[in-house]
Amino acid sequence: MAAVQAIALSVLISLPFTLGGVFYAQELLAIMGADAWSIETGYRYTQWMLGGNAVIILLFVINAIYRGAGDAAIAMWVLWIANGLNIMLDPILIFGWGPIPAQGIQGAAIATNIGRGAAVMIQLWILWKGGKHIRVRLAQIRWDAKAMINIVRTSLGGVGQMIVAMTSWIFLMRILADVGSEAVAGATIALRIMLFTMMPAWGLSNAAATLVGQNLGAANPDRAESSIWKIGVYNMIFLIAVAIVYFFFNEQLMSIFTSDPKVILIGGEWLRILSYSYFVYGWWMVSTQAFNGSGDTRTPTKINLVFFWLIQIPLAYLLAIELAWSHSGVFWAVFFSETGVGLFTLWLFTRGKWKTISV
Picture 1 (tube, rainbow, N blue to C red):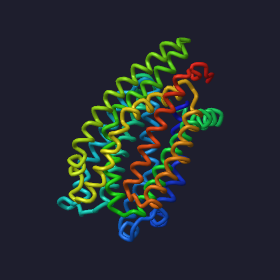
Picture 2: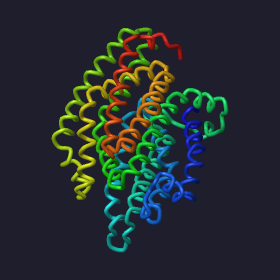
Picture 3: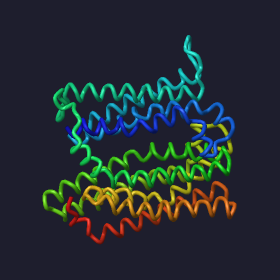
């Protein structure tokens, strides 16, 4: 029942973003400071990506259902399918192949939506057919206001964390747009590299939340704390290894995705600056998930609000625009704020109040 209500809620939430993307893509790009080419030509990409918002949300929500039910392997395989189809379709739709005309940047968005759409169809089929631990029956496909309200109430803290984090990135990209299109391109590619290399770290962090929840539920807070310290060490070691690669091979990584020397230089600089804080960032990821796993989703939200909205964004504007550090100002602002949030969250975790949270 909870799965059905979560899926229905996902579709409802996606509708305003879908409509906004389809009908106001150019206006949204203009607000974000996009250049004339992006507004007149590249807006098709925005239309497709926001127009397919429901597919993207469903992909992640249904995967969360499988993970919660203990079917994490299904969640992994559907992501492999989504990304595999995307990779195969990208060159075909972007450059054209045989009777298929070249779609340009719009083709990349179409490929993404097809890959994710196929994955969602597989998710729903398995959910209906029956996975290892969960199966939806016809009688359960109905509106349950009480269950839906409970889902919304439980998710508010997590939603708050994501809103703060995502909007801070939007503001940073807006500042970079004032610097120039090469800065936006370099930062975007560097961010994609960062997200890819951090997948194992996010997996470890999610495991931390699960272990905290299980051990606190079993009235064993000491084991919950012990698991966090162990996972934190593993995460730190992994991210230090990633940081070494970023420090020595940042431009080589960037050159895989672009041949523009300025974009390579800008993106490489960000990867190098990120490498300085990765050992702390690993601890922040794990300690934040420890709070979430204990049921205290408000504390990470408040911490993120202070460090990302009240420190990171103003500092980025000050360094990049007022002090004319250009894109470097944004990158250093991210370094200072995320190092600060990591150390503070870890210190708060050591105080141990999360052990007594009642869900």
